[in-house]
Every structure is written in structure tokens, then in C-alpha cells.
Length: 91
Image (cartoon, rainbow, N blue to C red):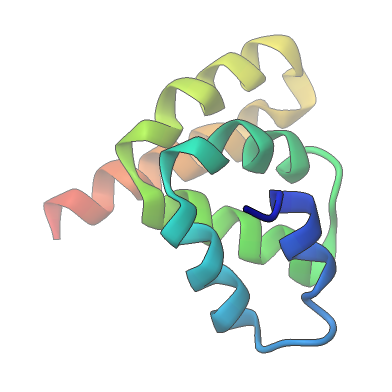
């Protein structure tokens, strides 16, 4: 299985939806690395990572909370994604 970082490195070569779907298909096992990447990547890559975490859903929440505790600058991003995850369940 390819790592999250390897899959994200293909982003310039592939359609962003295809990359996002590949990551979502990995599911919960990808969440720790996705949260880590979200704190360092920018631009299109960051958007794909964020959307992937939202689509994976509830299993992302604890990892986002933990990352926010360890990185105060990341706190607003984590809170936003958690709100989106919880909101998407209500829809």
C-alpha cells in the first residue's frame, strides 16, 4: 500500500478527485498521516487533505483534536474541520 505522502506526491500528475478518492479508500488508517500532512502542506494539496479528512469523518476527529492541542496555530483549522465533519452528518 502506498503511503499518504506518496499518494499526495502524485497530485500534480493526477486529477485531485482521483487522489482524494484514493486517500478516502484507505480510510481510518490514513488519518494520522493526513493530519500530520495537513499541518505542513499548502495550496491544492492542503485542500485535498482537508476534504479527505472530512469525507473519512468521525475517525478524524480525535486526531484533529490531539493535533490542535500540540499545535496552537493549527487549532482553528482542526476546529473548522471538526465542525464540517459533524455538520456533514446532520445533512
